[in-house]
Image (cartoon, rainbow over all chains, first blue to last red; front, side, top):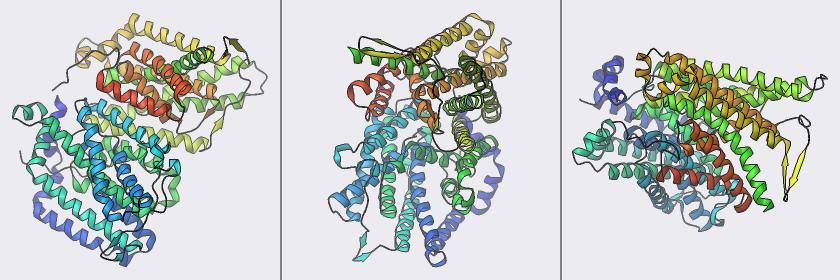
Length: 331
Length: 300
């Protein structure tokens, strides 16, 4: 199929970007990224509380979008239920913290493990589905998750109102209650995730994913256990989304089903494709466009989704590879 | 027994509507291998246009059925026009691009139409006028069947039969089937594939506008996010029957309608949707190509 050849031809067609990356180089680009991250630490000193919380939301959704990109952009599986794993992480933290009185940080491993576990359990049978069918199945999963939360599954999810009054995290005896402290927490986790993503791309697993996405048949003939690799990618993506879910529960201090509906999954899916699959700057750019830009143009709030809809069509028609596509991988 | 017959009729009514909308998904998928996510919103656009026609012509003294027919005609014409424009602007430039680009474009189109409806008609639930149709209800064996239900079932059967004949017994229908099998080969045989796709984007929205207006008349309400709700059901129906397969969409619609009605009647209405989605996943796992779809090996 000619679609499979696209990534190669892209590196030729987007001359500007290859020139750009050649001039700066991978190391230079990483230095710039690191510098931007350090600059981000000063957001609480320069902006008011409203903007600090917007920056925190950006960091949280940045992590979710990056985790979606592991499944969608790197492994090439059409996951349109990603808000579900995000929600599972948030609900695990909320339930353990509010109902069972656990400290926030102690809930993090469970938020990650439960989301990753559900992701893997769901993926194991589903990954053999063709692209569009997988997309539909994950939509179904997301819908079931939201309905289960709404119907107060097991009497612990709080129904459509969700769970409120989630506590604040304590770190070394300090209460991370202020908006700035929570932002720094989110920003540090984003930094860790970015390093992890870099390592993932450089690792054997990352290379296996790239190969699998380019040509599944060829990679299986070379001994790649595609089912195992894909399930693992799903689990990692879902687990990271679960981690972001914890941060979200802390930031908003409330979890309710409406935050994890299928439209959110569509948004995450769109962020990855519009930003650029497999491209960390692209995905973060997409997140910023989706979550920061609307705050600047708040007067036009009612036109928000109309404009997004229009922009999604326009970007795809004019730049189908995304706004900031992945660097060409050495052939 | 009363409940059973009642649910059969409720299911057939809703199933007929699902089938009408599902045909739009399945025909586009069949020819273009694209999930037209904006289809549900187009259908609800039809409901709103029809509602505007009904409220603006109400009290003009003409007989009710004539006004209803006019509302249907105007809704069909405008929605079909929107469908053709949608294909031209959002899908045609992406026909050679990566599959995902078209998916995003379709999702964008869905957002655009949905929010366009909200800006024009407002975010509130719009109520359909009562007394459009004769208020006749038949009672039999403990079940009550209304005139609206009978009208929807009969009209759905009629439209589906017409589509079946069109696709299987006309030159255009043959061209559609040929383009669905292999676009390049169809082009070599002198078929204008662009025209075939344009026709598909007239037929799908036409049936969808009828389905959407039926939803409005049956539930007597319309709201702007309705397109996603009913679009998703209709889409599940298309998958159930085997996406790309026209009789499959009809069968899937009716089966899903019945399944939904029985889940609501016998299990619980708050879990009804969850059961429907669980059914969807189960079908995808057991027989991903649907009930009538052929097993196709994945192209490498």
